[in-house]
Image: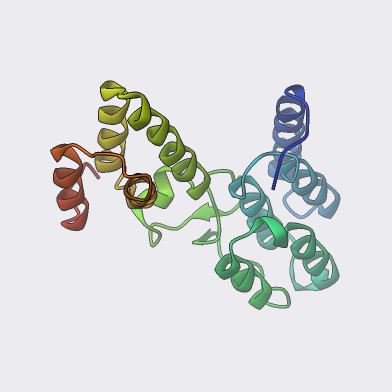
Length: 196
């Protein structure tokens, strides 16, 4: 999905998102605040803010708001991963989300992200992982060793297997040479080593 919004738009959307987050935190059951926050999240890049706002809505708006939940999910669906969309869809008519849920993200203000999600998901979003992988590909093409080392350090520290896998696969496709450090990081990630 290409983003044709101006450079100022993300800042404006971020401010609107934060203002709506404060309103939601003050009045967690207010449907209007939740929908305003979801609308602001849809103006931000990536899916994580949208998922966080939707999790808060499903936490704050009970089963009496099935129509609101369904409409919110329809608005958010194009920005959600399929398995996340299904999880929300299964909860449209259910009780409110529990306080701690794997559907919450670091962008949530009412629902709390569960420790049952991967270390990578708690520390970085899939959007971040993709952006980091794209960035290191440019560094590989330019021979920027410090940027490559910073990327590999990130992968081990955050257990970001997604970024590592995406970058490594793309590097192989582009026939870009990888240093021995990539093998060491691969081994460390396979063994689950890193700083937790």
